[in-house]
Length: 313
Image 1 (cartoon, one colour):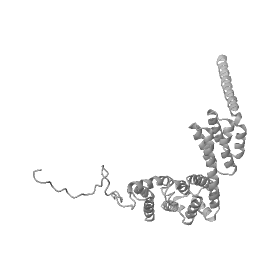
Image 2: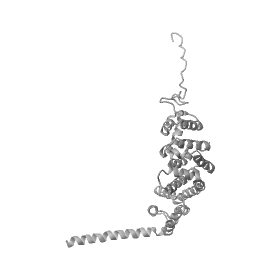
Image 3: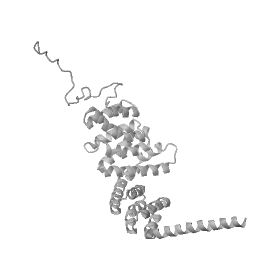
Image 4: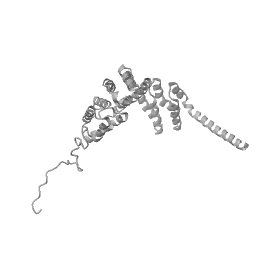
């Protein structure tokens, strides 16, 4: 019995000693990060998330100075009550792919800039009484304050993404105004509104006709597109353009007409992927596909029969 107890005691000391040595090594490795970690904690960055980023940085041999450069955008955003998670996510992705620290820092600064730019537009919009009424209506039984905070973060992140994809501030602000004025969120919900802003830069009309892009988004929201359906919309519009061989504007107008006709969101997506811009019945052949080119690139339309050659040939 004494031998067993001594064995357990010895094993306990070994485990304790190993644990202590790991903690000491971890503390020594984290020493170069001490000041920046303290700043991050004071800014309110989640401790578990901070530990995960710090551990990944240690594994990649990131210096204290490099770690500080990567964390500073997140700290600045947290101090400004702006979402910092996109920065930490990009740090983790960059380190996982072994991207050099200076390159990661450049990307993070662009993310920070986009969030600061989006805050000017989004926070002003959220402060309007009409927008507050929309959020209260769209919270659907949840705590309004909590729903507002979650919606704000989603809108800030997705608006920043749109701005980084060269969507201009005035077009983003115009879209937000239209969403409220046309009560476009009534059927779709707040999540779809945020998702709609996130896809703005992916629409095929985003560069050539931003106002038409806004109209596409409004039509989708009024048709009750879910978050998932909204995320599929850019691919569906691109597929429709390819299938129908029509300009992006014609495709967008076809989609809007289906929405106005009361075609359900899922059916609109299905029609777009098939190139069916009119929402016609099964078997409908989209314009431009009635006479597809042959293998040699020539038109396959019916040709007159070739006259027979002279007899005996």
